[in-house]
Amino acid sequence: MSDGRLAGAPPSTRSGSPLLGYVETLLAACCWGSSGVFAVSLFRRGVSPESVALLRPVIGVLLLAAAVAFARRGALRVGGGALLMLGLGGGIAVGVFQIAYQVSIDATGVPTTVALLYLAPAIVALASGPLLGEWPGRRRIALVALTIAGVWLTVLGAEETTSTFGSGGLGWGFLAAAAYAAYTLLGRHASPRHGSLATAVYSTAGACLFLAISLPAAGRQVTLPDDAGTWLILIAFSVLTITGAQLLFFDALGRIEASGASVATSLEPVIAALLATVLLDQGLSTLGWVGIALVVAGVVGVSVTGSTEGKRTPAA
Image (cartoon, rainbow, N blue to C red; front, side, top):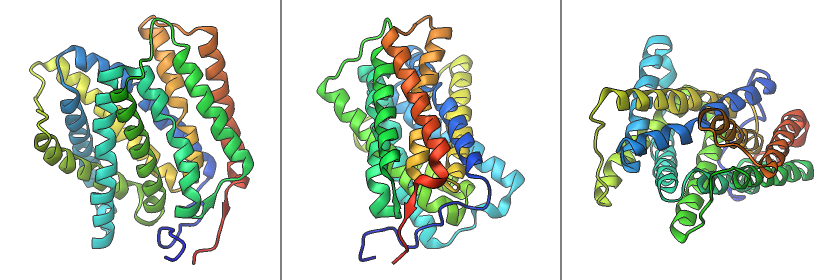
């Protein structure tokens, strides 16, 4: 492609309501919003970030494959080129995200990680035009900026929690954001063509293989939990944030534009903050509540204008 776009840009939506796509994305964000609580609980039980990064997707992809085998066996039939793209490209993107996200949480805490992670909508908005032909208008760009500002205010407004921006934390956080943006763009490209089930299963399976090879090669040790309670937490973590969330998110990417989906997932830190307030007695300052209001405003704005904002260029 002379213009650098992914070959054969998909239609703006698959059959079905774009509204359903936004609902699916918001539900995925709610699932992902529990990640910090689960991860911190596992770290406190002695499970290393590297172990969580590998075991969580392994359990998730096994459950995904079991669900597909039971319900829709033909959903995983794709060509060799698609398998390579999803397994290798998607696997590396998801795998890098898994390890960067867990190590960043362990090194600098949930607030710093979330603040850096939600630079991803800006990356997606910038890249979706040249790569996918989905050029965001000025209103969409303004909503992206509003949402990112809201995420940072929410994070920095969390009481009893201090964000620490050390060089290591910055590196892992930025890497997580870049990887998150990469698999959002790839999912938007692949889901309309190959289906959300194949995209979720092969990308997650590729991530497991990538992590199983790269972690030992980097001298990172993976150990199994040694008690039933820890296994239950890990399985619940996988069911919510891999099996359920990945299916919802990749199905949504078959219906709505990448930048819209990326902004809608910014509801995740709002859910995380509310869970921390209710479950961990970590309230929000006034700054934090202002941030939540901005995030909600940005997400609602993108959802309402989503059907008219995206402007495509014809495929070359």
